[in-house]
Length: 427
Image (tube, rainbow, N blue to C red; front, side, top):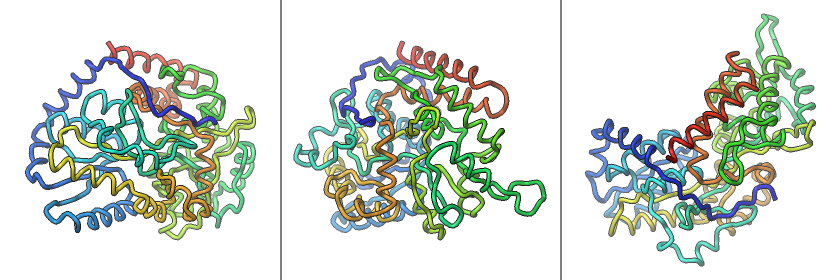
């Protein structure tokens, strides 16, 4: 299957440049983190959960705290980029949260910098065997060590549709365009579009990546080398650009917040978004359905969203009783019962076998549709190179939509910058 990936990824590159950069960040931000270690019996979890899931996390932390009355437990939200950067800064300074929750592609940078602890000694093989390995490995290994215990798999994009505006989602890009022309409307005749067929954060590379797979390419090869100056990348970028400028079924400008607001307001029939958002749509009274992002007619390939196991890693600075309590908390947060509490709210796919096989997952229409999309996705390797590839894609790809570069120019520039970042950071 396309999403198969060995759980053990080898990566022994040097880290001098990135370490110097992070040390500089740490020095400039030292004062911000001096207060983080005042209460030795305070365990903090950093995460990027949306509000509905944040409430679940608070509730399960409160329940865990009842069995550990001498300890205080709290959570703190950061967007994914800030969470990773701030964790590195604080952990290098000897502080920071006990647990960091995030995607598996964080593990490479964090492990190379030595800011997260290998977990091999804390989890019996019988427990690790309770996590799924098919259709993908839930837990994340790097350089033959376990660094992340999963609380869900996926974190992938799906086509989300408002059943009040469209009863049956398109299955091909041709259908999307045909249906999209009917669903994109100027309802009051003022020359402005009041309803779009589709919205999503299409100027962000992560949200464009599925289309690259749909045209037969990907952003990285099996040796963790960038594959950006290719025909599939050019075709994917051109197609997305055409959706906005030629077919005009998506907004000419659209970031994450704009897309989310349009869909929640009923001003868009469809959105491409991940499981972190679905609970919010349901809470807002939208009758949503999930489907695969439509097939690319030219290739007969399904778009391939990035698939990322999500889970918890432990700060390398923890010792003694605080480390033991944190390990116990990690085991609790990744238990089947807790995972299913999140599934009930967000329709996330749990990582434990018994939770994965529960009726809440296997008999739920939305969870099954999400799993169907996952099956054609691509697991992101937990390597540092991927972070540089994402960063290298952003300026060139976004320049397409401001008219500064053609897709061909952008693809060549993205490849060149990715190779430069990798070379400079590995020297």
